[in-house]
Length: 131
Image (cartoon, one colour):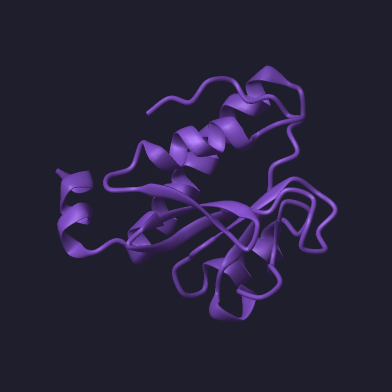
């Protein structure tokens, strides 16, 4: 899946494209934010609300991933309010405006979103992604 080049001022359309490209995903509002579900929520767009100053999203993460990424790059990753205690990861989406860096960001975001999807997807849809 290749998302279009993101607009750093409005990353929601390409985050939506990445999420909806995964099997059996639906989009609904949750706590006033666009959120994506595969039976359960796996990504929620945080925008500039929920006390965070950046455009960001929150996502499910495998055990230990949140701590590892926040320690590695605290300007890019954070422990989100409300769900951080459950291991969810916060990801800053403020783009750099540099085309090469933005392409790398799309790849990284796609991997993070796919991993979040795998954390909550039932076996049947997960098998479809793997095949």
